Amino acid sequence: MAAIRLRKKRCAGGGAWDTECSESFPGETHIADDPHKRLIVAIDGPAGAGKSTIARSLAERLGIAYVDSGAMYRAVALWALEAHIDLDDPFRLEQLAKQTRIEFIAPGNNVLLNGEDVTTKIREPRVSDAASKVAAVPGVRRAMRDEQRRIGSGQSLVMEGRDIGTVVFPDARVKIYLDAHPEARAERRANEIGASVEEIAREMIERDTRDRTRAEAPLTQAPDAEYVDSTGLTLEQVEDAILKIVRARTSNGKAAN
Ligand code: DC
Image (cartoon, rainbow, N blue to C red):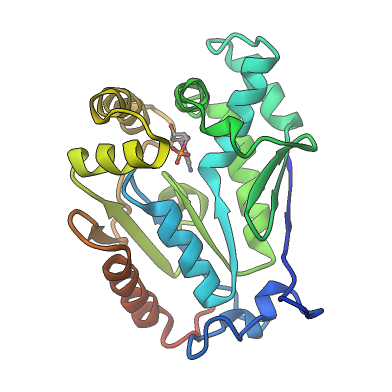
């Protein structure tokens, strides 16, 4: 079974955990202040729509944890590549996923795979490609889903991925489907990693098709998710749009799910 621990950061100079920090985001609702009111914000959508940036900053504003579920699939894929496991062998991949120990370390949300910091390595193109193959294996998805639910069972969080609102947390109070035109997504990703737009666009189409057409938990918008198109919008504009949805759906932080 994958073991995932979220180590929380401490407030600067203080002894409180980050879910209790309020000085950085004055005026925001701190849902995490009340341990009995859990809030799950599910953000799904294709690569390059801006999910990670938005999910991370939203979690900070709300004072709750942030989980990048794609990093979990990337970590399993990296281990499979390093252990020379055949990516067409679903049984071995499932075994591997069950044994994977992944930790997210605040404040930078660094990713540890079996104790090793793999934050940079999991972003390599070979890992991106392997991750979308590994993510199509039902046994791998089951192991990741169980772990994601376990993480969300005891705390409020923003989790981003492809199946968070549809499969992992179908009862999440807030569900966002963040999208953008394919050209805008390729451009954003290319800028992030310093590659050519054409090259990224080609790879993205291939991975997107795999993520959308796989049999198990394909990328799709949950019927009760709000659709947000980030094409041509600044980060602040997308953030504002999403904060509005969060506020509307949580009645100012009084959500129970
Ligand atoms: O979001 P990302 O590009 O880091 O995700 C890496 C791969 O994992 C991508 O091919 C989609 C897949 N994934 C998934 O199938 N389900 C999730 N909840 C998150 C990611």
